[in-house]
Amino acid sequence: MARIASTRLSRLLTGWSSEGPGPLPRRLADALRELAARGDVAGGTVLPSQRELALVLGVSRSTVTAAYGLLESEGWLESVRGSGSRLRGSGAVDGYVTEGRLVSFDARSRTAASLGGADLSSGALPGLGAVGEAVAALTGGDVGALLGDDGYHPYGIPALREGIAAYYRAAGVPTEAGQILVTSGSQQAVWLVAQALVEPGDTVVVENPTYRGALEALRARGARLVPVGGDGAAGGGQSADAAALRRLCARVRPRLVYLQPTAHNPTGRSMDGAARREWQRVLGERELFVVEDTACAELSLGDAPAATDGTDATDATNATPGTGAPGTCDSVRAPDTARTPDTTGARYATGRADEVAPVPLVAELPMSASVTVGTLSKLFWGGLRVGWVRSSPQVVARLAKIKTSVDLSCSVVDQLVAVRLLDRLPEARARRRAELRGRRDAAEALLRAGAPHWEWTRPAGGPALWVRVPGADTEALAQLARRHGVSVVPGPAFSPVDGFRDRLRLPYGHGTDALAAALPTLLECAERAVG
Image (cartoon, rainbow, N blue to C red; front, side, top):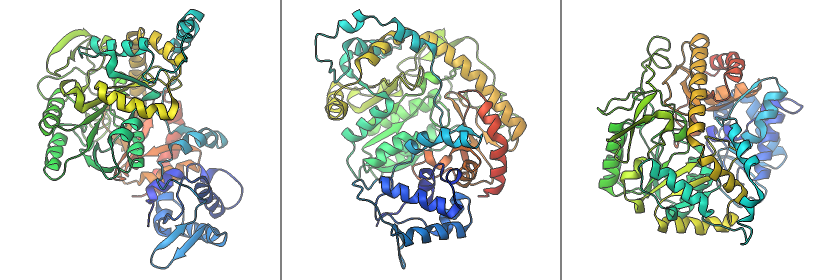
């Protein structure tokens, strides 16, 4: 009988406690019934115990007891002695429980607005003006050149595939257009990989924590997720993680390994040169298929020099913010000229950091055993749904076959805009990195002043801080905060094993106004949400 973890159920219950009339038990019962009616939680799923759910929601046990009683009286819940409370569904055909990301996107703005709170639920960045300029620059001739066919390009329009291939060649990674599949953002790319390369029950190795969209896609496929690594003082993703993979392979052979070596989501860390080489060595020795997600790689902040001696130049942290410890700004900014790894990760070319494209770790691995996922959506704008897969022509063809059954092909107009934006990558990269550096510094200063006991490692990239809240259960903290109009994502959402219950992801990509508004509420809720 399927059971849903309290942590996962809490993430599906976004906004329930801050909206609607009536007492709290009634609102909780209504929210649970809605999950069943929509099929977000499949019929027959066993809900957490009353005590466990109360703890993670930050409410009294009597509130959950009353809510379960209401559902049972209405025929939506069945209590079975020794088995717990089983939710009755409405004919949902999919037994998989999502992570609630769509629910949070739908509810976050009205929840925050209704209570005058703040939305910290997404790290997505505001769009760059270059997108509007590229749209305005399109002419009838741009579209007219393609109107002679039916408009369906399952692999992507030739100009964009060649442009993406040239992007990699400029970074020193030999790539041809036939190795590129254009997708509707990087999320579709990850989903296609899961559908094409993973069978239910297959072992898939992932970092812990990792991108929650990938966890969702892999879980939906029925993969057995095995975590390696962590995000300790060394920033995560270091040689010890590769050693853990080697030990794992002595017991079981994974179907594939999913990695984010650069500007990792959610931690913001990047692997140093020694760690990259160790990962390459283990992946090559074990002949493992690896999926490298570089969706956030263009958001590398470029203000720490690349290391060649195995030290991690991006890790300027210890234990207590404000004293050269986790969360400090005491690292030294690199000069404008940085050394950037080529395809080996060991040789370097000289150039301005803002002008250099990130080099995939898998560039040194066989093309037939690797996939690189990329996107323009993180750098330019989430509304531009253009991503891609780089792999062997055989893998690309397999993914394209599945993609055509979903959407036939991506929008031609979006792809034409993307072709123009590829020419503006250096400009966009420099602008975005400058913005994020300033906003990261401001966010760190805000937390050092307002929450001096919180801990974090300074991110080398990305739009958010991965913060440890000592002594707090962040699942309960997030639920309590929502009742005050503050939306925030707790650490377990990014873990394959619901770990990191003392962590929060705090975005700063839109500036620090929302974080400043939310911080008093978060501090108050942290005091109440004792882990």
